[in-house]
Image (cartoon, rainbow, N blue to C red; front, side):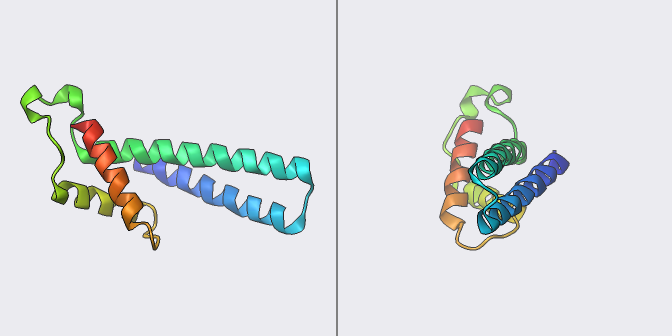
Length: 111
């Protein structure tokens, strides 16, 4: 699962580089459109892999938990998952709020 995430991240990073080069060197509208399409596909694949890994790291899914276990995640659980998401993304700057919201969302889906 981590290998899938790493591979998707590498493909997204590569697609971003191709898009930058296409914009910098003006390969033409058709080439730019194709590179943008590939970038979008890479972003979507990365997000799917990231979310699958985060759900795995968050613990058992709704179906595996007893009904009494359904609750809002604690701030500590959100903090731990947000930190893991941040680390998995390569520790980028300025993503704390985004990582926190994504962790809350994933944990709420899993609880």
